[in-house]
Image (tube, rainbow, N blue to C red):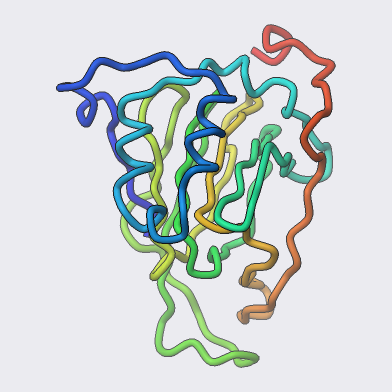
Length: 209
């Protein structure tokens, strides 16, 4: 399930600290599989702010689909910058039972949760139905937390402007299940990166606004 966490409320009793991407990575590299299952990441995101310019060297757009740009990873986490041109979207998918946190850096994205109508049987047809209302997340507002125990969802840039989001996964996700809306079944898909860390973004943020 996708849950919107209002950090403006969560951090009301805290003084937000401006931090660098390197400091955030130092924090992540100290975490273990066990600590990623606690509130450690929630608490860090509630009390620290990272300037969006820190992510520009990892921000590359694709014309044919949304871009998955790797910032850093180890055996316990994976940090990505995802880029979205107008009308780009994901298929309905899960996250292979991993926890996920997402920050909006530019623009807005629309989220939908789904649930299966009846039991999910691998290789057989079944239908999905939306649960709740579609939610739109804008840059500078909420953080999204995805608890993938029941996390079938889709993400779309329904706006006319590009969007940038930062995704933290508690364990790298090499593959996930994709729902084929025409065939009405799931298939496993290997996930790929569009770029790896160390690249330089050639466009300015002003050109995209």
